Image 1 (cartoon, rainbow, N blue to C red):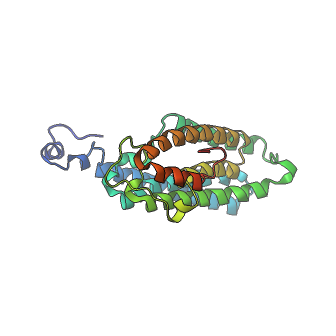
Image 2 (image 1 turned 90 degrees about the horizontal axis):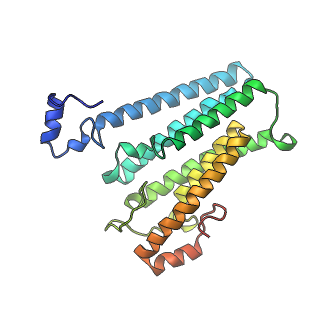
Image 3 (image 1 turned 45 degrees about the vertical axis):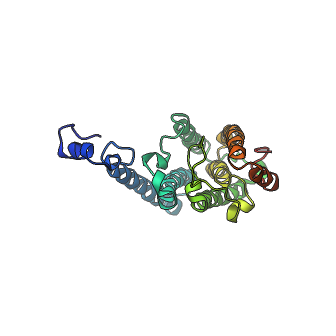
Length: 256
């Protein structure tokens, strides 16, 4: 909530060259603090709920707080990694809490409701083929943790060359990163989010949302990579063309 126009805080913001950091600004310190606090509460609460359900019950509903905790961790790390490695562009939007709104929120709500619905109404129903549910869940855990690690590592390594929004013009600080994680993954941040997302649905045991997430994300990244790489070829020319031919995205049929 923005302060009244006649308040000392508002008057100081108007007179200060750093007014973006005042309440209501894009880099509002108060806004960053409250979002970080809420994400911390969400993570702590979901961890307590998940452990409590696992220890004191045999219910599979521990998957829901796990999902909430994974979301809280993801959004916090989006801001933290940006703030640490690309400080000039870090702002409230770096949390990505309202990115692609409202489709993003609808997707996660649908995933939560599918898990709750199936686990409450059909607690003993095994949706996985040939009783492979435990293997699928374990693979989901691996994808969630690997996906998060790869995305955060990609953002930290790219530094000021990484941005949440596609850049239409090449900045002086924009360099083509081809070493480290970028030496074997093209667009590793997209790779990380793609597999992190479908991994969460495998842990939740959501066959419907698993398919929905995979299809929607594939279409999104296929279009985004095509548009972004046209710009990268314009920015870096033959250097990027050679890199593109040498390194794949590891997302099926994206960027091929």
